[in-house]
Image (cartoon, rainbow, N blue to C red; front, side, top):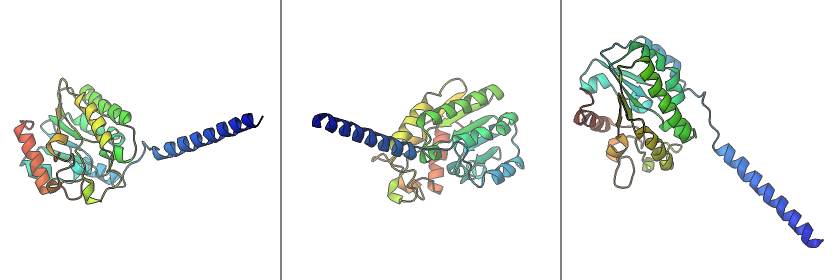
Length: 231
């Protein structure tokens, strides 16, 4: 009887521990597809005042895209800014129609690092990447899509803690991006181009371990020119 009582108590304790761990894990990975940065509405208004034409090339993404003047960097008035700081893949999907309707010549996409920081599963990010491509292909079949792999991060700056320590997720999402290559879809491997020997974002190209400085954008421009992606 004592042995039976011990086994019952042990089983209850195991069940309690399993429940606690499961609950804790669920809380850790909670995520919200409805999140939009505070600047989102104002940026949409700004974009509306700067319409896209069929001759334009669009840079679509989050703050890494938003913090650069693409027309000035590329010396090309047809380079259009469509980056929103803090944006996630769901936010891009919500504002994609404005771009598709204009049927631009090219679209350069870089989105997903904020999804990772907000615990959105890799599989969901990859699904949204596929939806972005599918919707552009359907609505603007002549537009060439250039999908960028996510850049590495550099935790030594100690600025964006939610973005650090998630390298395995960056790698998993990038593997999904590479699978997007196909007709009218070119994958640009920014990850490898900005990677240092320790598998971090090259420090001299960054202001905070996540975003780029002027040298970083110049480095990006050189990649675009070398690959003849702007022609």
